[in-house]
Length: 201
Image 1 (cartoon, rainbow, N blue to C red):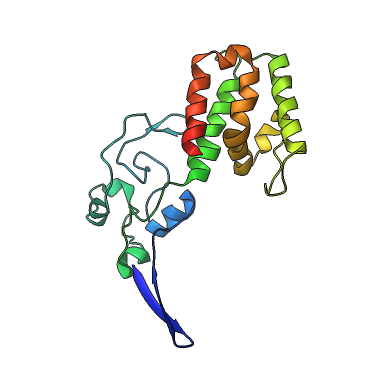
Image 2: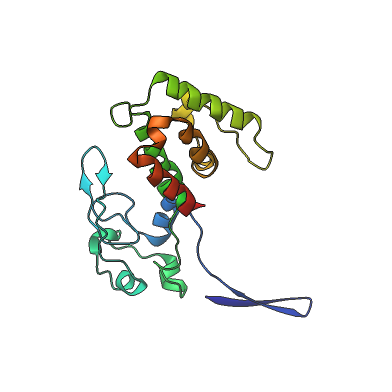
């Protein structure tokens, strides 16, 4: 989508690249369903409902702007509703909306990683290990530069962590803090954690 405007005899042309919005806002803007069997905004994989909706690793057929426009997956769309963006603007309703990192990565995958690390049946973490991780987090928080808009709190406050704290842990602390736990750093999960940290960075 392109637009033009003028200020004091100077002419400007703007071109919209994409809409940067979190997932709940994206769902409202596009008039699609947030949760449920067909809630993924990028592919048509079907979820299964247990305590919550779970999407399996198999990726379904990718959604495109054309399949969205033709309503090829009617269960993904809210019935009898069309987005004003779709009706009034010439934008791709799939391609113009990047994946929301806050809900998918920070409060999604990173939160699951920390839960996995703290699960003594899966990783075998001890109270001493947890104390060592907490010490490292507190030291990082005490020396955190002012450019970080929120200081990360210890694992004792994990249930109150904001998305930015999960992001800080994934990008800056995970490689250093978890490498201090020998049986974790030598296990199969640590290399996967490092790959994720590097990929998101």
